Length: 499
Image (cartoon, rainbow, N blue to C red):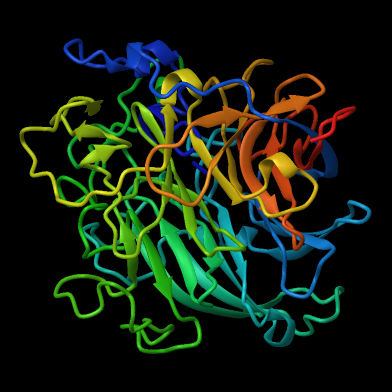
């Protein structure tokens, strides 16, 4: 989940934790006041849907997935470190895996504050029903040398993002849970700042494991700026260290690191540099001097959630933007999806030690690569939301007007803490399957017309039905009064309407 001037759920975190007024943090240079306009406004004429409570008592649910061979279960990633097994017939939940002791301390500015680290992703092996293997993406304290090249000196990383394999002893028995001693580490990557972690995992139709990694955090994917200048009303929680770890002008455009990339590996192989996984021979940068052979696609800022179309196999990424544009990308093998040369269809200007910005004209200080791939849908960051939350192409049966369309959303219309009664997430839909910008429509959630939660993620069950995941606060902590407010809600036909 999840940033300078907006972060994972905000898009670019200068001050997720310091609670500064939005107008102060979102200002653009006077000579390019692009943010005063609405870019690709979202129509309010999308289909109506209902939501049906499935499970509550979660803290910060980020994604829900089905396990092969288990049609009535949804496994829900809870950011503080619990993987829940949810019985979809009665809404009961049980702990399937607990990694809380492995995680870096969550709360970027202390207990109760925003964070993008934690247990972020899970994927079940295609042969899970027989081999019991699952894979997790976790944010852990620095614990030795990383798998990949890093410009961060040893001992100075904010944390390391880790992909690990685990085994369930008897996967055909629903009472069997993950054996904690079965852990096998596949890879770990140094992270310079706490945010832009990416963190999603999924097996593709090719049975290879895909992994999303953000650009490393901070702002602009560039070294030099102060990560977060001290500001009111909480100056003691300000990151005043200059941004490092981005190779000068950006990790996302450089093929020597996994940051800002979608990776693709063979969990059954062993020909990687550390011998813990395989490198598929058809990966696009195999044999390219200086490039990591794990890379499938690049040029991402924070590819927080991604998914495959269960019918067509297309790969969709919700890439969280910084200043102006939230993106939905249809990923191309070997493709450069733009960041930090572009933000959406706009050109991005790093702007030295000052705040970077997006513009209709290229940055004259940078060479613009050829064949950059624009998103298939985009919307204005400050007017329409604050952080795209990638979802799924809908292939279920209950909602005919959504069938074969990409359903996704945004964290919150406003971005501030504590959240107010109108700081709700939004649910969107757009056409799927082709490049070129598509119109975005907002789903009307009935009754009430809106989602009364911060949207943290999406789930998809074995039948292709979709689940909205979120909580009231937008942070990975229980409410001090109400307790855990995280829920999973199933999308259903709107009440008293035929969809």
